[in-house]
Every structure is written in structure tokens, then in C-alpha cells.
Image (cartoon, rainbow, N blue to C red; front, side, top):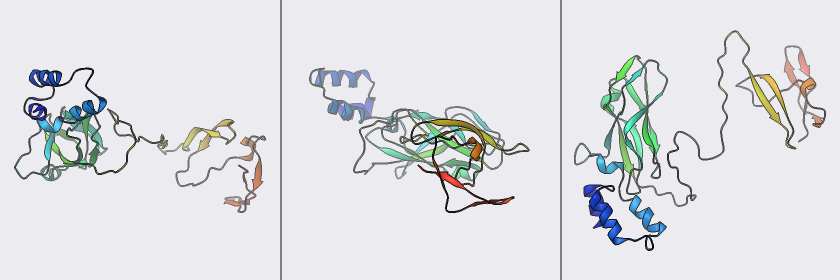
Length: 239
């Protein structure tokens, strides 16, 4: 009866709230009960599929947006998580919109995401204006079958990793040498700050011997570094 009330009137409706308050008291409502109630309804309950056989529901933009470059833009949709019923969803573009030169980068909406659902969009033929309310994407719901997960909720966090932080330097290469101030940390804890040449193709970091702290032990490397001036005797960190 509670599920039917939520589906018909919504989780925040006075009728549903009164029904829940009647069934549960503060002493009887357990964390498991709360989790089950929250999973009953979500934004998918407010999105109707276009046809009886539709695999997904359309997702509309919440703001007017003009794409002036081909760079991927984030556009707020008119829906906010959670999706409800413990469901996750794939966010993909609509074929009719792709034919118009507007492309949606596929994404994944987790069942425990509670923030504004955003759409990643780009075009190869800017400028293009996307009016508010344009149904440019769709959500394909599914139930996750992941057998094991950590007791952590995603919440409103999006477009980031829940693991270790990632640092990816980006710099424009023009007439000036591509340099960046970096901090080199020794395994024992000490560190130095240097302004270094950025080489995105290098798989090792090369420092001038004059900048290497004397307290950090070195050993001769098995191979030499070959440059414009010929091969140079090379040393590497002992640790």
C-alpha cells in the first residue's frame, strides 16, 4: 500500500507522509526501513516513456545553451537523482538529435547519485543553440548486478573518481617552452620544488644533477641518456 501511494502521489505528498507516519514511529523505523523507503521513488517516476515499448525515457535540458566551440559542454537536465527503485541508468543521445549534428557523450547514472543529472554535449558545426526543454538525451534504466560494493554513497558527486586523486597537467605549447612548477617528493618524505620542462611523451623524469639534493642517494643507471650532445652518463635514484 505504501509503494502504491508513493507511485501514485509521490514520496513528498501529504497522503504518503501521513501513511508512513502511521505505519512507523521513530522507535520502530530502522536504517534498513529508511533505505527501502528512499529506494521506492525517484525521478524516473516523473518521466513517462514515449511509447509502451520504449526502452528508455527522454531527458530534457533545464537551461538555454549555445555551443560556440566543439569542446564538450555540460548542460543541466530537468531531472535530479536518485532515479528511484534502486535503478541505475545509461545516459545516451537520441538518434534524431544526432542527425542534427548535436552529439551526447554516453554516461552512467548510479543508483545512489542524488545531484542534478547533467548531459555532456558537443557539436562539430558550432555555433548551435539548444533551447531549454529540448529532449536531446535519454535514460536507459537497469538494475545493477555488482556482487560487492563498499558502504559509501555517491551523493551529489559527479564527473570524478571515487578512488585516489588524479593529476593530469594540461598546458598550451606556443613559442615559449612548456614549463610547469612541480614538487618532487623523495620516498623518505623530503621534497624539492622545480620549474621543469613538460614532455608528455616521456615515461621518466629527468633532472639536472645540479638540482638533485645531495641527501638523496644515487646509483649509476644501466643505460645512458642520448641527446644532442651525445650520450651522457646517467644516474638514478637509489630508492
